[in-house]
Amino acid sequence: MKSLKKYLSEGALLVNTIIWGGTFALIKNALPDISPSIFLAVRFSIAALILLPFVFRQIVSITKPAFISGIVLGIFYFLGFAAQTIGLKFTTATKSGFITGTFVVIIPVLQLLIERRTPRWHNFLSILLVLLGLIFLSSKGENIFSLIDELGADFNLGDLLTLICAVLFAFQVVYVDVFTKRFDYLPLVFLQLAITGIGGAVFTFIFSLTGIEIINFTFSGSVLIALVYTVIFASVAATIIQLKFQKEVSPTKAGIIFSFEPIMAAIFAFFILNEKISNFGLLGCILIFIGLLLSEILDKKDG
Image (cartoon, rainbow, N blue to C red; front, side):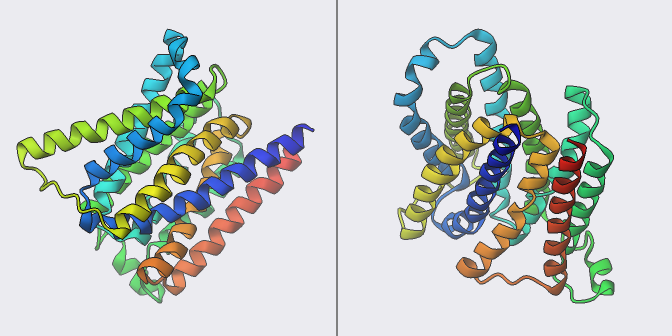
């Protein structure tokens, strides 16, 4: 029974990965018509309002420790999405998905520092394969020489922001593991969404006031599709799934499952934005899949 619950939880996180993979191309497609900060404000505010009637009683009676935990998760959640969404203005959806996926290699370090839990040897081997896969995925070259030449050569502001996003999401994954074992997950979901929506509104005000960004909001079809998809599926449903099921999965394993996200992002970007993937990108997909499979088989053997 415990094993079935574990596999159901892992399957739920994999569904999340597919959902998240679709957001990169849809948001990238919408950004010409809407500023990143406004998109965050609208997306997460609506998501929080949708969830509010279902969690109102828990929010009213929430304890101080649970409230603080929700605030911590919300801060990492907001800053991660802010860095990722703004970064999408300067990089491709495919590359954004790949760089975001690197948070999987940061998780074991944070897990050791925060939870004092040492990952097993095969977790590190799986992570190494995933990291190599992500490196290959981020290459547009067709041979090893072009891959070497590309490393670091095309690293722009969008890539840097997305890398910062990966670090912030790694913190969020580890703290989800810590807090959902102590508190009811639904109030934490609401606080994450609400803080991100409020943060988007604050950023919009600051950017508008300082002139850092020209605020833009044109209600187009691409904006509507992106908002409906990200609000219902990627914000409400996916956040509930993560906080409900991730507590049954170790942070390292969750991170490895989430590493499927770049593959999903590349697939969606190909069909929606016509972004291409190189031969090395295909090799990267294979390496990531092997890393996932190896972790699953050896975890089962050790367990």
